Amino acid sequence: MKKIGILYHPMVEATQRKARAVQEFLESRGVAVWQCSSWETGEARKLLAGTDLLLAVGGDGTILRAAQAVVPGTIPVTGINMGKLGFLTELSAAEALEKLPLLLSGKGWLDERAMLQAEFGTGKKAQVFHALNDIVVARGAVARVIYVETCVNRETLSTYKADAVVAATATGSTGYVLASGGPVIYPRSPDFLIMPVAPHTGLRHAVVLPQSAVVSMRVSTLHPATLSVDGQVNLPLANDDVITVRRSPHTVRFLRLNPETEYYRSLKERLTGKQV
Image 1: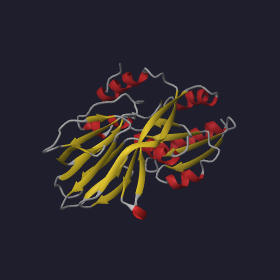
Image 2: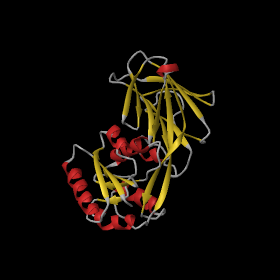
Image 3: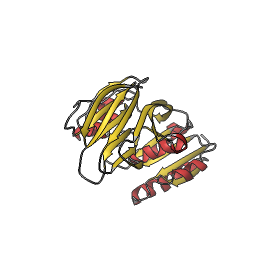
Image 4: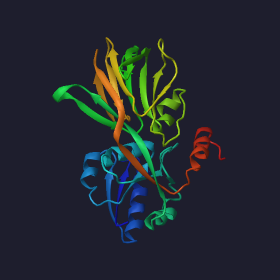
């Protein structure tokens, strides 16, 4: 590898120190390195040309911002965990400098993850977003439920009366969905799921959909509502707004050292707080 980028969480001093240490380590081995705050994905995109690997120093939020930076390209991402759970990260802060030479020498394997695409608005006002984790239609600051008429391939699935309705990838199934009592999907599955949060009426369980499914969600509310994409993009929704969700044409590639079998052991360890 000749050029590596580093994204770091700008509000945590420990991540900045680790990013500097990683940069010094890589440069001592003849690698060109650039750094950027993970909150400035637009600036990061300008630096991507010729980059062989993007290191995300932080937690899963930093990984999600890294994904937004590299899409629609194919530059792989490796996470250095400075957070608490770190479902998406690969290296712990303590082992990063020890294991980075393995990546530099060509070791590791590519873990390709599906994304979701959300379309909001029509005509010239239409906006398209891509999510590695989830797309959430939720109530706003006023603590009142919203109604979300949800159709799959133009057939009505349910009209949810709930705090939120989440469309999540397999990767995102360990995020908001899991915290809300939903299932975990095998991480490299192209399928995605729809799940209500705190439903009053409608289907109460998650529904797993094939990658070919197209989902429309129409919001009915007298109060402000919100569209959230990976927790990074947040837009206001009004009554009768429609969001269309389908599998994205883009994917995110992670460069990993741990074997594929590590996933379930790591999942159990991070959820229980016990080493297994």
